Amino acid sequence: MEAEVIRALGGRRAFGSGSAPIDLLTEVERGLPLRTYAALAKSLALTPSEEDKLLHVSLRTRMRWKHQTRLDPATSDRVVRIARILALATDVLEQREHAIAWLREPSDALSGRAPLQAIGNDLGAEKVANLLHQMEYGVYS
Image 1 (cartoon, one colour):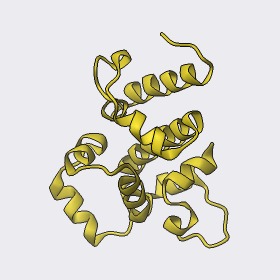
Image 2 (image 1 turned 135 degrees about the vertical axis):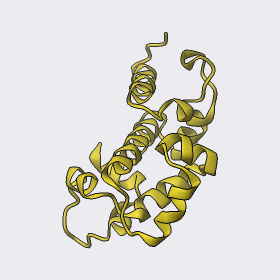
Image 3 (image 1 turned 60 degrees about the horizontal axis):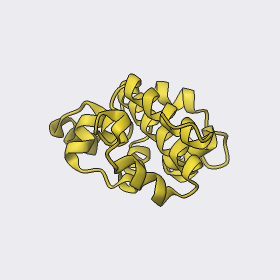
Image 4 (image 1 turned 120 degrees about the horizontal axis):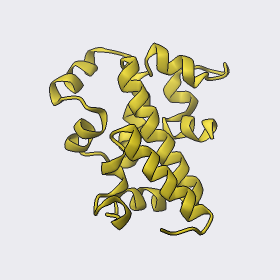
């Protein structure tokens, strides 16, 4: 699954690691390269409002990122959470386009919220992951 998460974050190119193995834990602790977030935001077509809510940052903070090459560790952790859910949804639904559409579709299991709206915190991400696992194994609640 880690390879799928790395792919959701833009792959080796976004990490700039050449042929060296990517240690995601170390990268998060160090702060992910800003390119990884840009790749994820682009693939999910996130609006500025969605970015603010998912990452718990303001427009002003995101503007400061233009002068940085790496995110802080806390933001990196949130970015990886989003990438993990995207990777899992892609695995379960078999195509990234289907996964993105599902992440944006309101769900009764999430009180009418779209999964993308729910993954801004760990509990929501866990609930979305559980929904995906239930879909994978044919268990619907």
